[in-house]
Image 1 (cartoon, rainbow, N blue to C red):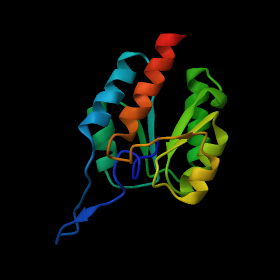
Image 2 (cartoon, one colour):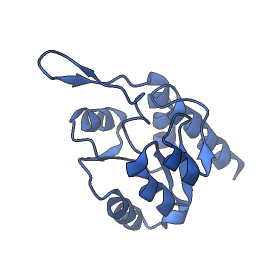
Image 3 (cartoon, rainbow, N blue to C red):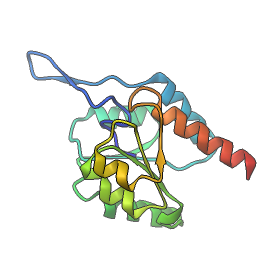
Length: 149
């Protein structure tokens, strides 16, 4: 999953010293912890170079790669190391730099306020915005599917 616009509402606060801060959803964090407990492998994969991405991933206990310029190859390697094909992977994105990754997986997912290019390749359109429950919504969808399997 991408970070900005997925874990966040795609906004950033910048103070007078230039320090950036983002807002994330505790509800999303709970959904992701439920997925982790169910054994679902996850990866935060972001082009953003801000260490807040790594800090959030560490808090959630989710493997994180940030400053990623070649998301598709990183995603492919991550998937291969875990022994499953990209056709079994869901990728949540929201912007033009996510489109290639979304197109490479079996389950491209997006948030409602995503860029039109991301919306066009998505197979799953969440109803909750990024940073406001989108990941919790997806987690509950996945967990419901796993329980029915």
